[in-house]
Image 1 (cartoon, rainbow, N blue to C red):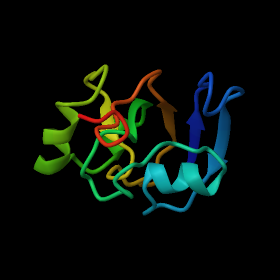
Image 2 (image 1 turned 60 degrees about the horizontal axis):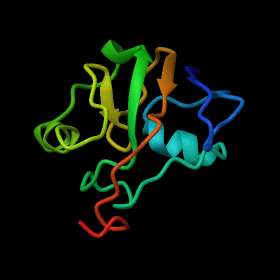
Image 3 (image 1 turned 45 degrees about the vertical axis):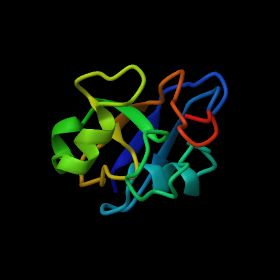
Image 4 (image 1 turned 30 degrees about the vertical axis):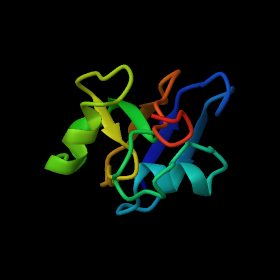
Length: 112
């Protein structure tokens, strides 16, 4: 089974965490099932950027982002070449290293 290593995040995962997951699960679902409370304001429907993550290792093993995800990523805080929406990034058979950004943009709670 592939492993996902979450790098430490000051609020969400202060110590970092390594989890084993079945291929075919989204990074977001894997995090939530393992008590890593990544934000997902649109309930994982690819309609916001709150679950934005950086895939520091293993990016090439993920299916390519579809156009809708790319459109939302353009609105994400701190966009980088290895950015993905964790609700859309489906784990394959390779290990991943994930970094959760320091900030996120929540269009609902921030009254935009």
